[in-house]
Image (cartoon, rainbow, N blue to C red; front, top):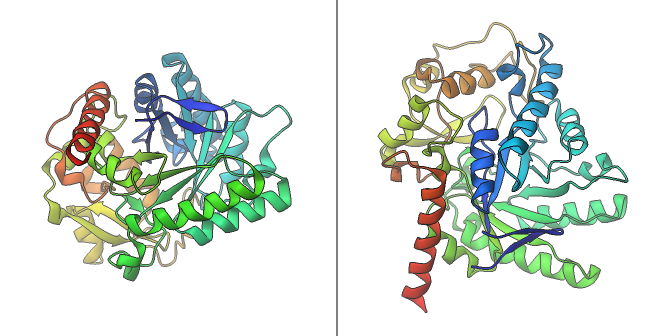
Amino acid sequence: MKNLHIGDLVIPVPIIQGGMGVGISLSGLASAVANQGGVGVMSAAGLGLLYRHLSSDYPEACILGLREEIKKARDKTKGIIGVNIMVAMTNFADMVKTSIAEKVDIIFSGAGLPLDLPSFLQKDSTTKLVPIVSSARAAKLICDKWKAAYNYLPDAVVVEGPKAGGHLGYKESQLSDDAYRLETIIPEVVATIKEIETTHDCKISVIAAGGIYTGADMYDIMQLGADGVQLGTRFVTTTECDASEIFKQAYIDAAEADVEIIKSPVGMPGRAIFSDFLQKVKDGEKQPKSCPFHCIKTCQIETSPYCIMLALFNAYKGNMTMGYAFAGTNAHLATAIVTVKDTMDAIQEEYKAREKELV
């Protein structure tokens, strides 16, 4: 298993822990992964809810909360820490500026095309920029735009397939289409990135994400050209995950058929574990009366069946009657809550076993 390079950062174990909001991956989980040689990633989504005791103003609370989480992570690890910031968030710019000012190692950005992300860098900035894409076309578009407008190229690219948890960058009809399988799009992105690397004499690592759960999955996708992998779902059922124990138990209790595609209020398909809350939504029993946060650009309160920020926050706190858990397709494989160290060790052992099996 080779080191992963993101800019001048060297990651000993080529595993990135996916950013999961609201509150699922914060400083606790991220620092634990970083301490094991991977990249720990905090989600910037909904921090104003978690830190509303610092300010009654939601945008300000988000900034203060992000600063606090970065500080907490830095106090717990000397490893590599990232922040996941969705383009679709209304406070995207604030979260990016704060992350860069606090010198977080990496910003991961998806849920839209982060076409202006390099514009926030300052002369003394050290933060690496990694867009999350779902196609070779999107990867090329970002590279071309960044190079032309900012003379900057991504330090790496995360390619997220349709088996991921949470919001998906695909139409619902594409989720079961073989043309959009991660195994199909990784070689396409790798080929596109290699052309860009040759043209500009640079290195841009390609990181595979979405439906990767075991070390065997990791080995197989890296044989298709990926330099590393991003996993979210497997890290939920760890001791250090920042979510409530009830949230983690939802993964352990889930059967394969319980993980389903939902229509999110933000206008994108999402993958979540079925719950009574989601059944009530299907039955038309939920309806927000007002929007207290205006957190997502594409969310329309007039047509939204519920406030997604509150639903995810409630689930993070363990109130599953008022929320639900986003999850990847392999959530049902979780059987116990174990430490991040044991999880990272297990993935690497599974990787070696798969390598031995096929070599």
